[in-house]
Length: 337
Image (cartoon, rainbow, N blue to C red; front, side):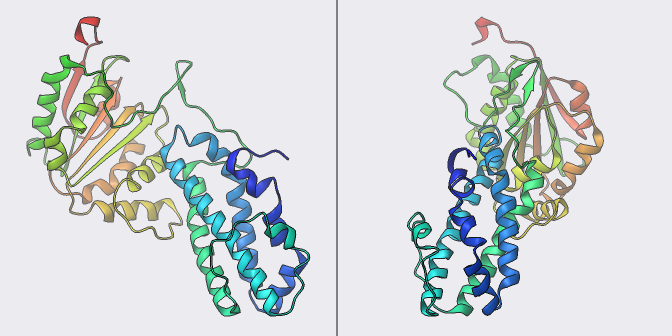
């Protein structure tokens, strides 16, 4: 079996899986009453490792997947290190290490060995909690076992995710629009809603993303808002992915999130009482129901919070709620740059 990238350590070598499924491990777990924990660890690790190749392929286009993958690798190494501790435990019980000595040489040692079975069991339970956390995110992130990453495309061309960073090319012709949007962001004019929506509408190449970047990085805007978040939406308006992207961009306590409802509650709590700016770049969604679900946690924010969307369609802008300001951009000419 051939694995891709770092996931090869776990799927291709079979070293760790060999330890997990060995009769020595089963016997020791039975004698020391942690068979249930061991079985949970096996199932979680198989589930996580099974999607890591897919995550590797998606991480460049989906920053949230990159965060997940980094955490998955970190936890896999923690599990690796536990088997150094396991060997120490079996040595103290006078058990032979012949079946694991070769495999152990392939796994780096970072932790001081626990020689007490109760402490080892406690550590096993703690790592299971963390593994459950990232396992619960697999479906939310759309990761699939044994499937290559899908590349989002529009009109047959690959979509490059946007970021809040402005490139070296500055569009001077957008200064007027930028100042108008910044002025609106800093004011409390608009609807009665706590969160007002500003839509930047224009054809491809009109400079929508660049204008949003210039506004997002304006020093006055940075100082005005408690939180600023940028999410590249692109062609798929995946409510779960967008919500997770926002959540990972704001301070929050990483608890065990089991379902999407808990993710929304956690985001609501993170935004509560804070004046935030959210940019949703390249939105194509025309289904009001999806937007209605996504915006639910936003109402916890402080009055004066703002959302900027960039889109090619005024229909999209209209369904995003109470759009109190709409900017229509023309395609840039060479003289504009």
